[in-house]
Length: 128
Image (tube, rainbow, N blue to C red; front, side, top):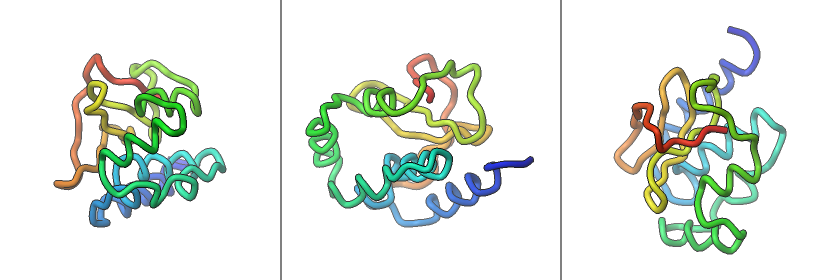
């Protein structure tokens, strides 16, 4: 495969190998890095270390004017159908308050405190 496939794959695998740390190496910061790689943005540098707990992350998100991670990414990226996801797309999985930021890599991959998690397609996903 050409293009960004290898850099995205390497970035996600390297990120998943790092210890989970809120605000530095978590599901949100991993997706920020993936978007930065593909879009020449600086979301990771903007948001890293702005929180150190899940509740702190929620407060930081709300300070920016967003109620959910879905709202945040919907403001930054174009929403797509989950049926049209491509390698490196961002997926928000779960219900409000229990959202996971994920990366589509042939599977929906999430970084969790307990490690990598492959998620199944479900109707309550948003993809960007």
